[in-house]
Image (cartoon, rainbow, N blue to C red):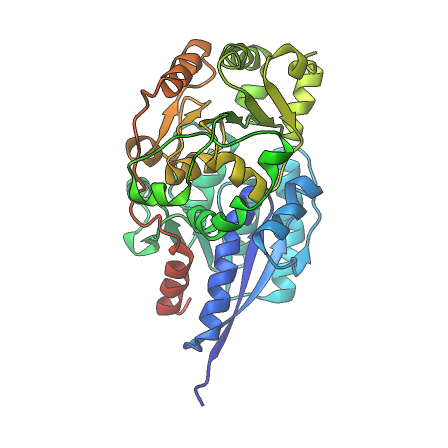
Length: 395
């Protein structure tokens, strides 16, 4: 009987973007162990508690079929420094107790940097999933987290060629960089059929938009055959919602767009709080055809996204998801760390410029938007590539 080398890995989640990136890794590890290769992986799932309420955390574990965390740090909210510091203190205790062979972090949230930093100080190897993405805007906390995590990680798994080039320009040795594709796409494609079966459209009295596409993969994903379209909106970044003037510029655009098409807006707790502070909490009554929702789960959101006419967002991951789905995306930012969604996909940067937002929205509504293509390796197999590389490297 083959003797298997057992390795202990810690996989870190903290905020909702992490859940979609780690879920495919957990499935790939289970598959790997079932194939009885040379390494047997003993995964420990650690939840830092950066996002901690049901709508922002627990519902995603259910939707993504993620196992419950083995360890929950429960750090909660706070300033960036407070949250990062608390995570480091609590996670260091986990490292002393568990003594893992590898720590895997994903994305660009505070949990990503904090757990990577605590690990490398104890000389524990770190693998960064979704490495190399750059917006080149250092006013974004996520950009600082990306830069520092990549600088200290031992293994950098990238979603696209531009990420590889960014890392090389920063002096990262090529033998640390591995182009594997996008694990967010793994989650999307794995959950697509399940998402189609949710009843979110019926609950909101919506029907999907008719928006054919020539891309074969995208054509096979969604069959749009409806009569009543809508736009999906997400909004949470400080540059948009913490500045009242910027927020009002976006609201002015929404007001005009809503005269042509309904807008569905699952509202982030931070954004709802700012609306109240700015005296704008009558938004739903002020804007025609606007539906404000509490945060919703991954499957319901995916259903809404795949059946929308277009999406407006300041999220990073949604730029990727809309590219794969062939849905036009207006990104309410002036930079993106995912430029491949512009060059190959369906994404357009409109920032919080009222005129630009309205112009690009009207192009979509008038059928003038360009069709995108799905980038190479965005095929649902990124997580398995990561596990295979780690197996080969005996990390």
